[in-house]
Length: 254
Image (cartoon, rainbow, N blue to C red; front, top):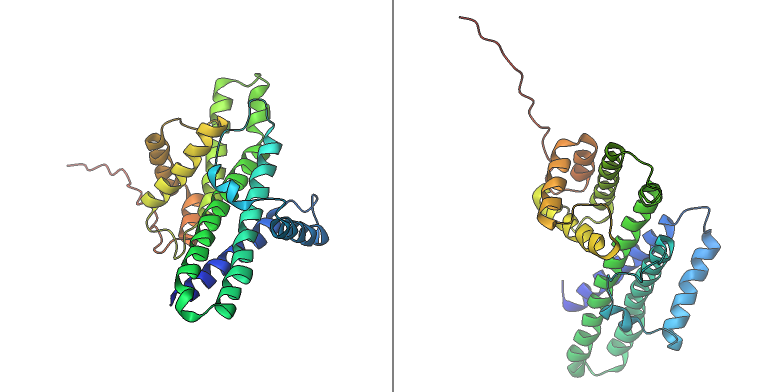
């Protein structure tokens, strides 16, 4: 694969990411026409300069203002993810292709490298905000925030709710955030997912362990021991995990 092929691969992955995000929106909130209008509106803003995608790079994941509603945070991350994905596409289909067509071959490498670097930065930003959107959407849909805020739940019920929330977030991350080539071991998968969840925990005060190492160990054990999570991992892993061996108690009489 030469350098141009690598940039083309990033362009294809960005296109897939935007397509997945649009189709992961709740069906009752958007239809196919709305999705097309969303894409066209973003492209128009980028081309006309009414939005500056590079400004998103300095923000990434950051705490929202105190009192901001979860829905507003979710919308923000979705908008940034789509904008950055479309920016990758615009950079490739406009800047990079025009450079190859209109600039002398001897002058192309430096220009192509600069455009490609911007593509990589934009794609990384899109991935991070897409992950935040998916995870925060899961938090909202699990309704933990609303229910715990009411202050009427018993301690054990709150603990159980946290476990349900963590399992749901881990399962979603295993399925939707797998790296190219699949997960390289469940320990590494746990560390990767924990790093993302910990960032969101710090930013949005999610009801998860506030120590990244503790969170990683907990996720690792869940992936290994929980059948549904192990299945989700195996479907996205380079090498599947084997079923845990259950030891039977044997009484020996002499």
